[in-house]
Length: 306
Image (cartoon, rainbow, N blue to C red; front, side):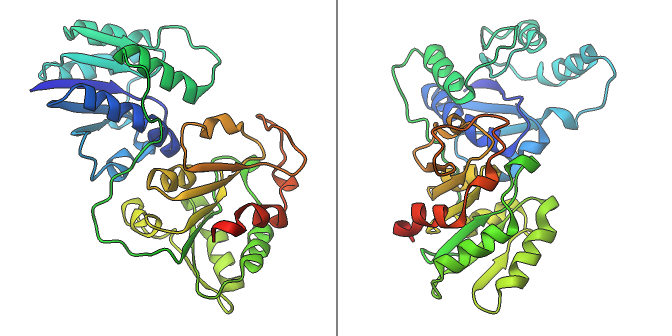
């Protein structure tokens, strides 16, 4: 059985999901191979991919010993990986160091982005590069997260995502309160998802609405358990965040609020439906327009799906 090494160096949870369809198609094209994924611990790949049938081993590169000089980091990787004979390596970022590392390990075929970083469309770069590496014409870029446990939910659940990696991507708590009141369907259950930094806001949202709605925060649960609440839910509504990408990869129709990030970051998935401010034709970095997205505008976009 052949061993395949894949480097995915971007740190976020959303990044893990973004690369997932390409990693899966590499695994399918290299049948009966063991897939080794090297990524960052912030990606939470070990939790997200716990049930993944294609990825056999996950190593967090930044959980290794800290070195002041990068060359020692590469030496540590070489020392630990040289015991395994890899046939191929795929490097999903610009890196001379990882390319040299793979060559020193004697890997026959090393596919890589290159050595000089460029400003480009992330999702398009991943897709087109994978096509080129595998010599194929197309594949489904919509990523999939596998989840085997019994579900904690059903089609009456609405996932509300209030968190974001940056302040400019957040939507005011008052807007979420207004939106849930507009939805106003008593039979629905609302589950709030966010990062640890937004746990306080999630509790406040629940406190404001629990007398009128069936609403609960999932912030205290681990990511793997949260997957069970998300999978099979009716829709995700919320910010452009990790949980938007997770929801889409679990097959849930995901409405993401885009007021400060380009919507092309979400174009890889058929399950993500960007909502931009009314009257805007496009959104870019530094549009700073989250406040321009009204609860009424969001409700009009999602009301036929709930």
